[in-house]
Length: 451
Image (cartoon, rainbow, N blue to C red; front, side):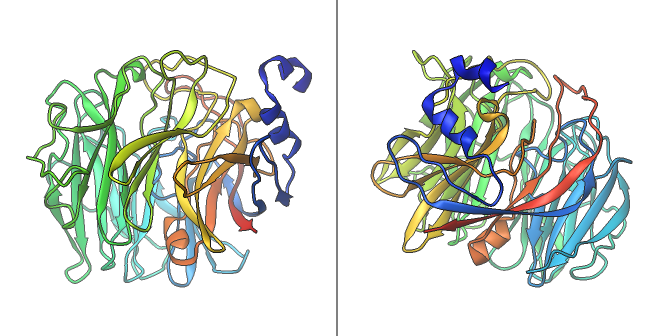
């Protein structure tokens, strides 16, 4: 297979393929030194694999840590939601098949899991324009889940993309789309530890005005500021994605402002949104990626698209530095494709995750993605936080993962600077079709950056 693809792979890509070994895997681009990364896989069980419902980018979260345990959730071959846990530092996983099932044949219908400040698990699953499915554990750090319940009871009938985020006070933020592709609105709820109840923050934070919808990525920084960036989609066809916009809230989601400090009048519309990178329709711009911030709260947004005049789609980082929005090309890809169509897509590259890792005295941006150009292995690209981002890349997966997309343990990274990824080989057909693939091992890929 390698010989057949030499004509479309550059020197950088060949280096990555040569480094696809398990253990310590290191590889440099022709220009830049890179730190070695040690990778270790802890196997949990076996999960449904005929599409990417267990391994899509918008799982917030697939894996999450409490004080004593790490938890992971996935669909098994019978479409049941399985929750597993292990004590920190252990490889002994305890598995529990819950009473809940999902439509695993629709890759949108992901499982999202979070642990609140008291240790209770919160679970939402099986959504693609249908009523809210939500429950929480019966006891702190328990695998036993309670009965389904509403959160607010309003705007919960046409739910997609449920996401949890833990706030500094131990409470939770919940985001979801109310409505369909091309005409949906962004809803935000807040969970209070004292009352153990939900309240509505925003019923329509970003308004598609019945003509479009925002596909967002969200991040809560260490100061408690909520950052949201998004692309607009005019129709259900991904080809109509355009522009990257931004907003933030410094009061827990009540009021919102632009990066300049100018207040938004809510709801935010296409006319009022701050465009931080103008990207026209038809640019292979993907939706639902990731973002992070540095220690000062400056936002960094990861995405991919093809710039005018370029021959290939690349990963880009759009970021704010010294009061200005900039962008950096993080890859040197040569294998291109055309992005278009309705529903889940089988795409040669995954959507990217972006985070900041401490490496000794330095901070590094870490971009994680899967690329067919390197035989569908997982790639880690890093760049030190300097005025000009200089990227280097290496393969970090023990074996190819087909149509996997990255998700990670946000709380473990936040608390311990440890990067643990959900890892599973999965297939994906075009739209909501499946590909014959028996259940595959579910694992946690532990990455450790070494100086």
